[in-house]
Figure 1 (tube, rainbow, N blue to C red):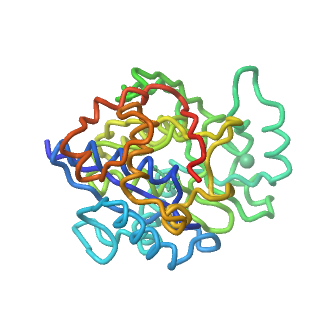
Figure 2: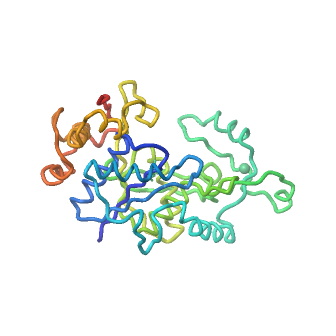
Figure 3: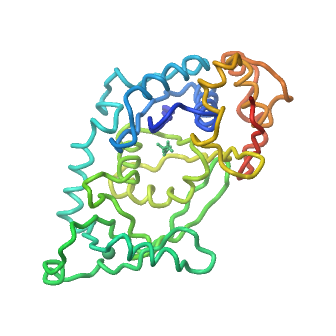
Length: 315
Ligand code: GLU
Ligand code: ZN
């Protein structure tokens, strides 16, 4: 099997240690397995994404010593690497689903959905939908005035997969409560649709990403199956959190790769820090990505089975 992986950032800001963590570990694993890396730009949300961040993230990855094989500027059989340029592809899938009745319009207001979400079932965290609009008749639909979002008509099914890092998983997806949105009322294609369709169309065999997306995986497997693509193997990486257990994000100060570079840190010390968090090297190690590729096996990253890792600020 020809291994193909992807790094799929959303260009909403400068990449930070949390993004570099996923990009580096994906790169290390893929290069050690002689696979192909696709850089996919998840820029569907035109309000939040900026072209200058695409340029910046490519510079930052290159500075870290991380390369890729297919991506912006290079069109392959799957077309553009920018999701914003792939809308006709997603729309065609959506229209087919609409014709087949695989998706249905949901007229619920945001206030109503918030109310459902604020009274979750015990032990559940994801906001559940109550399926209100799933079985509306044509006549009932005609009476609705709001522009609808469109939801996937889920059948209650167990979804099983084995995560490379989290082990065997079984999730039961339920008709109604797991009818996730695929097209928003404002016309924006939802992440679930774009990511699944692209993983399928781009022939992605292994998906490395943060654990925050573990709960989205069963739904994505359903969509991939529906589209006739094999599901990739997933590897959900621990989230990097600060001393307070808060996930590293763009909001925290001094963690973008740019900040670190401008503060005089070398790429080797950033990569060394990532490998230290991964449990592969002692603290304070400086090592380039290229040296790591030759001397450290992905399997030496012994800390990757944990749900999260405390990443003490670098600066
Ligand atoms: N674009 C998503 C993010 O930046 C990644 C989605 C994925 O890897 O499936 O969080
Ligand atoms: Zn509804």
